[in-house]
Image (cartoon, rainbow, N blue to C red; front, side, top):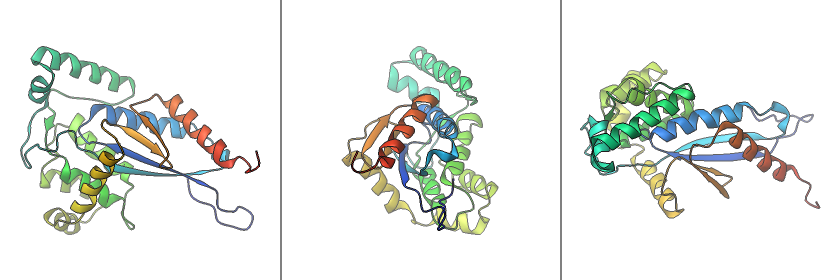
Length: 235
């Protein structure tokens, strides 16, 4: 949706939506799809615009940069053994399929996500050939569906190039420290504001909705916020 700015159609109020999530979080991918479906259920005549931004969060900030390990191994260590890990992975895979997402957790590779978050930050800058949501989707697909190493410079560069970034530009970006401070600031912002699990959706920096809620819930939340914003001041 674009902001309309004419004498006949004055600028409409904007709902700012800040989404904190990690690229390797299964519920973040499922939540992304559900949120977008909920947003898509809202009519253009609602009377507001939406400004959606993705922010970094790392489930495993201590993961060694450049190293990839099978996700099943990581889940087994975290959740008490291979059987419990297999149960959890099977559950998220089934849930994702119900939302139209293909998970291939048998070949997924867990890795440090700092580089991936920097690319998502880059996609949010003016002049980016794609929106943050598109970059986020591509990187999650690389991890959950394609079994690619999303901590790898080469893999990330190819994903960005596929979306329209120039090879020399994206490779120079990944080789630099551009965006590092900004991504770390996003992670710190989450910590300061008490966000300890993802996905978390923050509306107008006032209301937070945690978890991969269903599409109808997201629609209801957005409609309620819009109604409050459009309510006359003397009501």
